[in-house]
Image (tube, rainbow, N blue to C red; front, top):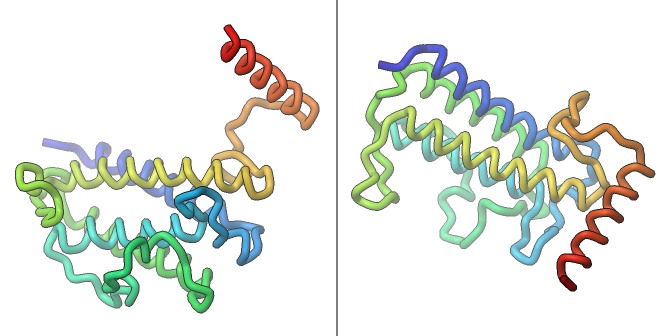
Length: 195
């Protein structure tokens, strides 16, 4: 039997990752939050949009809940439609949809015990029967992975780094310290390469 504190722990990690992901958009232009920063098109707003689909899917149909006001793009057959935003899709609307998604997902979490059964139709047959605990671990892991992607993308855009406003969780150092640190890493990489 699981305890409420275990569920609260998982919800706290889930919300921390949600907050970190959305915070990565703060202060950037529409261009910067949408532009592809990797060969595979990784972009900040796309990561947020992707997590809308993840949370609605895993905390909705998995536990027999209908998703109200399902975004039209989630019904699309287009590949990777959830990983980027069209010019006519408002970033404010996407972020607001994600915040409403949190409320929907949190309601599922609050209404069920961690051992409540669920079913993930698109998973391999031997893993389709799940519990809320397993889904929470899966989603927390996925969103933290994408928040890490967002960390790197944001740093590539404007140099901003860290987990959240007021707590960057980085080594203390000014620009000179970080430049010297990077030089040290570059030197070590070159020496290792030629060793």
